[in-house]
Image (cartoon, rainbow, N blue to C red):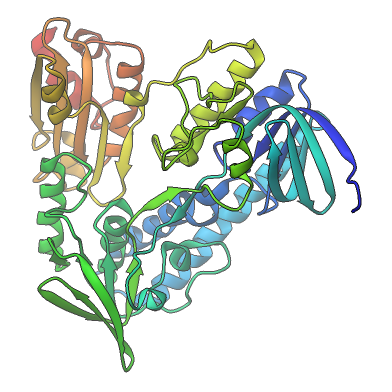
Length: 458
């Protein structure tokens, strides 16, 4: 047996996505020797490769065409969307390569596969093969798409087929059945239905976006029905069959025929294929995800985990913050920095957009926390009128009853995702209704509706 060369580092990061590189950069800037290993050979993780960045680039191009043309050629728009998103990905990948160089020589980036051998040892196999010895280990390997274990599952495509770098399908099907009514399924249905495709969503629960407040689900369902999207709720899928050039999705009480079937039933933390079992033998706690405290430390003192692999908030911006929290705690040598998951916003890029952050009413009721509700319609908001979303625009803000502290917010609006940025800052910093009422937010943007809604507390 050949003994591998050993290389020593202060910190080893497994993965090159948002859960890894922000923290790796922080540590490298602080003078620590850092190793980051990622099989893609660049940074950005699944978000840049096939997730949030390419899907939003495609969405913008589709919205651009569908808002100015009553009839569009889906193939023409799709080809332009592919060119747009590939250009954006190339730019961002180039930028990330420059960032790696900026942090050398303290940062060593290796394209390859990392296998954990112990809490201090990782075998690296890629452009070079060696054993990495580290004082600290940060696991940021992301998540995998879930596929229902049903007959015919091999007949489906995933969001990777729609958005992955240099791997997108070249021709759109004219009909698409989407299994799953979560945020991925809903976003895909919104954008592709605008190109004239016949789109159906088959969801096992009784509503779309079952993990979000019911009123947000209601807005999306109403909008989809107006747009001609077929919704089949309370319909767990049992099988998929081929029928000539079409595929048939067989669910409870319904059969849906389409050219293609998209499997969009969620993602789960990536726990296999990189030697996590070695750490479990040393006491690592794993419960469908790697268990961490709010300082991102696992049950092993020198091992941290960040991003989707923790199963907490499976979002890129959450992963970035987690990565930096872990890095700061490694630098201080104690749990000095913590993450507040209630200040992590969740957005769905339909049109209008959906956004929420903080507690929901259901959560506050369950916790017995007294609260007041500001239910604010956007029909008089100038920006909503300009974008023609005033008929459906809506914002709900939850306040702690006595202190008027912002506890949660949700919106269905042209720019709901951006509105959530204000409430994220408010929740993270314990701001009150009075704090927001006193802020002069810009006109004529929807932000000023936050002022108007808070003025009763001025």
